[in-house]
Image 1 (cartoon, rainbow, N blue to C red):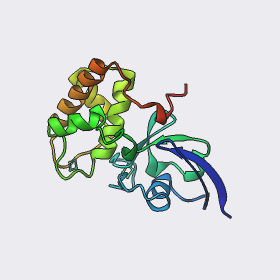
Image 2: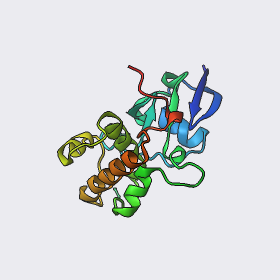
Image 3: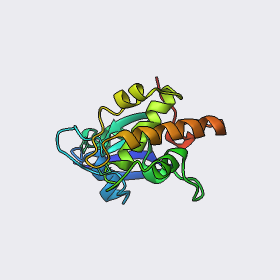
Image 4: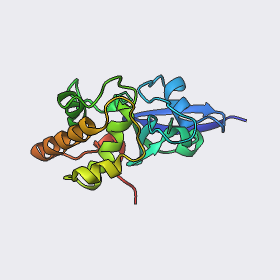
Length: 171
Ligand code: FES
Ligand code: FES
């Protein structure tokens, strides 16, 4: 039997009837049409499906849509503001942090969680924070550089890593 859920994604409120078994990643991709969130495995290993839910990075392939009831979610499509890239997007561009781009949305959202918790992380802290996100193309070094770029830019601008629309971390 379908269940009604209400969620806010990238600042937009939605209400839908969904099957209880529907995974959040399919809700985002197939019901909302937000296809930036990718699926790279079926064992919760790759992190390509990472989104920010209530201020925390989650693998949306391992959350049921019904568990997101009442949640505030940020996907890659919600990062840019008025066609201006978010510092993390700019960082990946400037530092060549992507090649095929399949892991990139998940990488960027995990990066925001790293920077939200520690605005000036060391290389080791960044690499540890990225443990749950796999990339086949880059060898990771340029991703680390991209996140350091974003860290500097966010500090310069005096902003926060996770935008307001994503809900801040609920502790
Ligand atoms: S699709 Fe691989 S962790 Fe979610
Ligand atoms: S850029 Fe291709 S998997 Fe990371």
